[in-house]
Length: 227
Image (cartoon, rainbow, N blue to C red):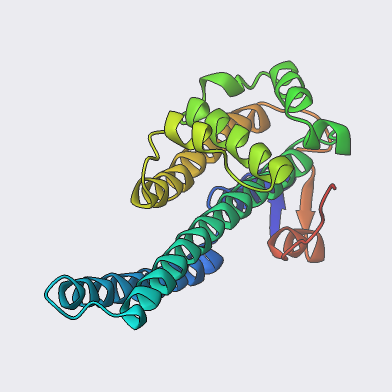
């Protein structure tokens, strides 16, 4: 089996256009269970208040209602924490995918070029890849800011969430889901542009004909990271 190196690389780049959903699915499942628990607590509270205001006001009911309010507040914090973890996961996955694209497509990629956003943009611009015109670019920038805020502040600020249209937790859930799709669109368009540059690369290295194990290694999973 023989193939040109840049053809193999172009095929391999397609691996890095999507974000694995395993963790996100597990997190969503957890959120659904927690949401159901919150619904049951609201139902219990409504029943207790109905009893309380219809002639059976007791200290026991008052205490239970207070406990329920505390539980509901805790649940809301749990759900928001899960969503914040999803934001970090999506962004970390994007970073890994981008680094793989750069290291495969360009021999002169360095950890610095692959890790710092400003350097990434300059590096790709020199290669003829206009990052800022990629699909989903603006959404990516907003998501990047939110990710950084969560990492540095330990949680998403209400002001930032409101600016993104996330007034209630359902808004935040929808935002995270839509952001994953936007970032995948960004990676796909970026990859498309990188592949064009790769196809036009006439260097001996990229046009070398490979065979045997040299071909197979481009199909092997790689865990290499720049951190």
